[in-house]
Image (cartoon, rainbow, N blue to C red; front, top):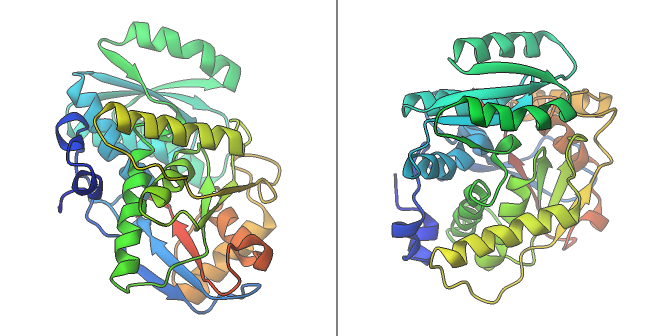
Length: 329
């Protein structure tokens, strides 16, 4: 694993902000030429190919920083939250177990299907302690009890979306900027990402600004109605991540994060509910581009991209970049 781009740009961070490499980058990019988009060209940055041990995607990007911080603080148990079919919870349990850390998961109800049933079995097999809290309110009330029950425990919010977790996509933005400089892909006018907990979009917004791509719009497609995921919330997370970098010794330049456009138009009935548009986009990506998406996150983001016209781009002539955050392979 090469040295993190953040360490190259801000050397003081190497001693103060540890990272535990869990994947191999850069994740590949390619043009998608068989999608019926409203206009313009579309490129893919496939973070599904980032990661080792059968995992990739944004969960691994975040855990590289979160797990390093957990080990630095000598925590023995991670408490976190997800739906019954949570990929975040499963990735956390598996990577934490590999590094001697226990995981306790508070699980909120979501629509049941074959994938969720299979995922629940994977969660049981992961060694994590499972607590079926059912609703958001019961989960919020249960977390303090879990922290008291488990020795040397710490809490990580859903999806790993806090200031440390968002560093995964600050780093990804620097990686993308390097790929653009090297000619692997043209500079996009916008980057389309699903938003389930906010850390990916917030980290990208900050990272693109720091990497000299502050004119690239982050189009954040909200897929979760159980958390507040508006522009103000994402901007605040980006600011907290910038403050963390400054507090750990990075001399940040006076730059603006990349603009965020937040849309809820593709959410449908709610988190975990497939929509016809997402299922159609998923099939088009699979059949036309051999790209494996899923209906909860990336299918809805792809549906938004397929309907994106010039009004959703920062430049009519610039391509759109789809960031595939789908993790399990």
